[in-house]
Image (cartoon, rainbow, N blue to C red; front, side, top):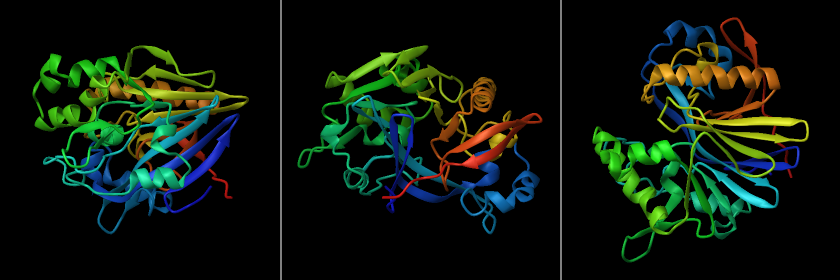
Length: 306
């Protein structure tokens, strides 16, 4: 499958479908990954542009996307994007967005009722938005995937939930996100909280990788001789492969995130896991190798066509 909004590849017995909600310049490169110097972007312009960096505006290029995994006879959706009609006054790119994400899923062969498992790698606005949809007429938020179990990191659910004052009340948007995209799924009885490690099926395992948020997680795929790791927001831009100690501006605990990032990338390099970040543009996934204090690129993902 290779359409405007969906691409696919197969690893072992698992089909992976990438569904892109949006892609383009997201913000100043120096603002997204503040500790990476301008020279790193310029020295690597040949492969960073145009999929990951727009030199003319010095903007980081990012994608909002989800991943559908057909594994063990079930359909697993990894992260659910921004969502429609959300009040996100502090995030102009997300505020009251309207798009056809569910339509893109259906064109990729995935109806909402077909999804068996939803994985939220963490509870930021751009990873949980399509957890829910608004009921026409009354505006009530209900689960967008009525038959799915939603796997939510327990540490994030506590941190961003009402018991901890919606992230200690530091950002009003955290309350809005939880109330429209997480709480309705709790009320429907579809949430399963987990911590440490959680086996999804024989091919897929969730693993805690804290720092970006308290409960940030990665999803590991092992099927046959193939390996992949969906790293969520451990890596926002490919420059963090070159400079893995450098966090993004969105990390709650940059130091802890750097430890998780290095651990996950080292294992990915050693075990030849395809690294699948939440926001990479272009091919969206890459195989890496150890290179000095950082990591080099072996090859980008190759998608098949129908």
